[in-house]
Image (cartoon, rainbow, N blue to C red; front, top):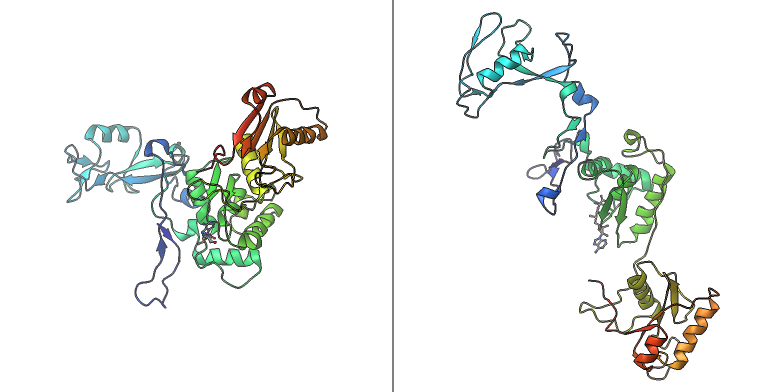
Length: 376
Ligand SMILES: C[S@@+](CC[C@H](N)C(=O)[O-])C[C@H]1O[C@@H](n2cnc3c(N)ncnc32)[C@H](O)[C@@H]1O
């Protein structure tokens, strides 16, 4: 739970809404390991060393608790002779034997006068390297909505509030601290003002960020460019952010397939070519010259006969693998000047070459649309 406001809103009609929820999911509890928050200077301030203990600064924990403990009802006598029993309704939470062991090791604090209810010393040097994340995140660590709006205004030099509930950089930092390590990949499929990408960048995480609105360009990309230049808002100062790195900006093409996995009837050559090239090679297609040869990669050429790419407007024209269309593909291959003589994969409506010919010429024919893999 995140405390998104630091003060009650007097204008609230009913109750002042001061918090939001963060939902935490994992594939399985077994696979998820949370990180600790770094111990802040504030947290260290709770430790001191009033008795000059050689083990350094310490704080204390109570030894009584409300939970029933059958061995936790013994009497304790303080160094000054005062007898202590667990306060009414509580039990010592350690056994008498464990208590004496701690006392012999100088780990019991009896107060300045040596007579107080005993407490167990907890040394800073022995404390965990970090602080266990709790389910409650206060604004001091996680920031507020108002801070987030200010961050966006400063970055984008504007007063209009495009985002009603932007998240402060500190909040996203808390999330990424608990759930990721440097170099991990972060996905935000609703990027909004770009906070997740900006924070991931400053924290040395990789990221994929998706945004459908025009603000992908006007806000997100422009914010990330400022981050790269070393902007000093949000978490920059505390992270020691000085700029650097980079990102790539892609625009999503029109969908190549409908919900049933059929090729969209009016899909253009370039869109289908990009899809086929990616599914064959796992790499983005750099565009072609309106010719059927999509490219040569990893010792294999890939060609697509689609939409009358050869300029033949007759039915099936330019979409069928014949001696003529094959010759044109070979011409294209020769024109690349790479002396390529390897196998060829051709996508088309139909092949008019005999199976033996295809095999001899090391051609794999794939029929559109059936052999095109639609991504789920
Ligand atoms: C509430 S905003 C996210 C705000 C963000 N948490 C922040 O701090 O800036 C949600 C964003 O998701 C975008 N969005 C909604 N549906 C989307 C979709 N299907 N694909 C990509 N972006 C989408 C909206 O344009 C909007 O910018």
